[in-house]
Structure formats: structure tokens, C-alpha cells
Length: 275
Image (cartoon, rainbow, N blue to C red; front, side):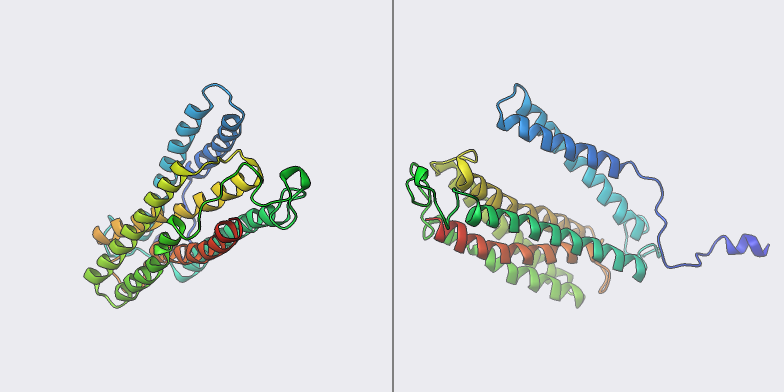
């Protein structure tokens, strides 16, 4: 009887997760996505179709994976927690988010490095073959004081998302909802303006170091909108109806602040310096 009772209790603070297919599916989708992207850049037939299918597969795999993580912390997706997300587990999840942001920072560092320091094709040492000018001859840079300046609306979203987090911690769900909604509206405006900017630009991602750095740097900034949209949905669904357990939303907010900082560097270096 004693052994039977012991089996109902966990003697450690860690969450031993059950077997999951999503890490494998996510890895396969990422491999397929990157391979299809390279093939698409080289003009292979049906590569763009495979790219879209891989992207959809990746989004689905990550969505199901996040769904399972949410379910591990909740009972029937309500507000009563079953103890899987103990303090030790939360520290591990926070560490994972931190490492993800560090990897993103290193990725942007590589983009800036390529922009400023790439041999013979950089902003600091443009080659004679490029006309000894930057941006290279034939590329018409975007005026930083037109659409890019308007896109600094992204910085205002940093205030609104902090506003939402503050009220969520203090149990004011309604005001937190408004803060998240304003943030997503600003992020949507930013994304729409980026789309307009891409449609009117005279260069593409294949136009040397300038085009590659521009599109990779500005395009990856838009990823954070998805994190906040999921956070808004969870607040609406009462998944985050507590004052101290909203790890997923905090991860999205932390990433969004990172995006704000990256945008400042992008505006100064790629838009202002690059023009």
C-alpha cells in the first residue's frame, strides 16, 4: 500500500515529458524548408511549391508542439495548474528562450558583419568593380526618411506590450487585452508597410550582399508578431488568468523587445548608412 501511494507523488521538481513526435517533425520541416529555399534561389522547378509546403508543415508542427506544452501546464486548458511547470521547469524553459534569443542575436550579427565587412562588397570597403560606391551601382536605395521612418511605429509597440504585461501581472485582464491588441495592430501596420516597401524597391534578395542583407535583416523582424498573436489568443481563452504563470507570453514579450533593439540597428545601418 505504501508503494502504491508513493507512485502518485513526484519526488523531484523536473518534468519528465512523454514521447512526442513534434521535435522530429519540426527538424524535418526545417531541413525541407532550407533545402527548398536554396533550390528556389537557383530556379529549380517546383521548388517554390515545396517551399510553401515545408513552411506550412513547420507551422503545423510548431503549433501542435506549443499546444502540448500549454496542456502540460494546465488542466483542460483552464486556470488550474497540475504542477508540471514547477520552478525548475520554468527555469529550463526560460533558459531555452534565452538561448533562442542569443541565437537570433548571432544571426543578426552575421547579417551586419556581411553588410559592413564582406570582402570587396561591403559598405565599409566597396570594390572598384562596384563603382567604389555603396550601395553598388544599379541599386537604388530606399530613402530612410520615408516608409522606414514611418515604420519606427514598431518602437511604440514596445511600450504597449510592456503596458499589457504590467496589467496582466496585476490581474487586470481587460487592460492587458487592450495592450496586446494595440501591440498587434502596430505590428500589423509595420508588416503591411514592409510589404509595400518590398513591392516598390528596385532590387531583390539576389542583388548581391546589399539585397541579401536587406531582405534577411528586415524580413526576420516580422516573426515576433506570431508570438504576440498566440499570447493574445491565450489571454482571450483565459489560459493566462493568473498573476504569476504566463511564461509563454513573457517569452514573446522578451523577443519583441529584442526586435525593437534590432530594428534600431537595422534603421541606422542598412537604411541610413546604406542609402
